[in-house]
Length: 250
Ligand code: PGA
Image (cartoon, rainbow, N blue to C red; front, side, top):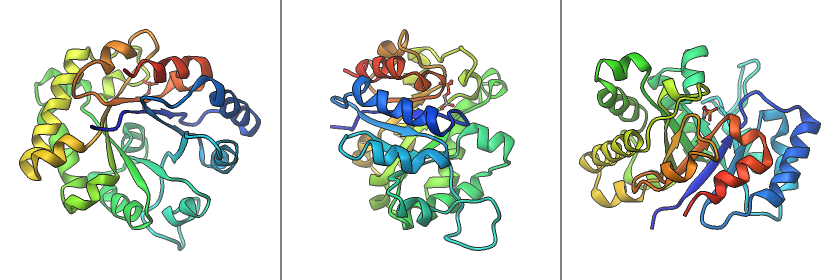
């Protein structure tokens, strides 16, 4: 059976003390049971989070990384640095990185390779913009995003990949894709992977939905057969709220 996952993307929120406070509260509010729970705090809070979560099942992800292992890249953090403090996952391809930091499919493909060569698992994000959906090209946009960054990988690497479909028009807007829209896209993604690799591989890849998931809508979205959990932004910043979303996984 496919793994269910609920991941919290904190984005650029929570200073050091606030972060320790939230992580400590998560120990009580988020009991990983049916779902694997992952949190992605800002870089400076990764190590303290890992220490607090040491004896728990909650995993820690970085929100980004550079593709080189070291070198003259002022202000950047590498996969090997993340690995050295025990970070297991990295989020790559988030729409905010694509939009504000010009991350292209080509760059993301290099980051994917670097993360895998450092033994990290990847939460790979992609999704169409509102205009794409209005023009009816959402499937082809999504297909090319995953093809360009991931389809060069050998089948064996897909064990380390979690996909996160995040329609840009639903992120931080309060507007969620309907459970049917999410299901349709997730089924399309699975069939695309099946054609390129195999049905078995497609069936084994977790596909999360992200975009304004809250405790009030999580259960309905997560109930769809091809939706294997969520990537949660705003609602992951409150321990109780995030805990309720984790519990919405059946
Ligand atoms: P949101 O963000 O839940 O605040 O819409 C989701 C994301 O960007 O991963």
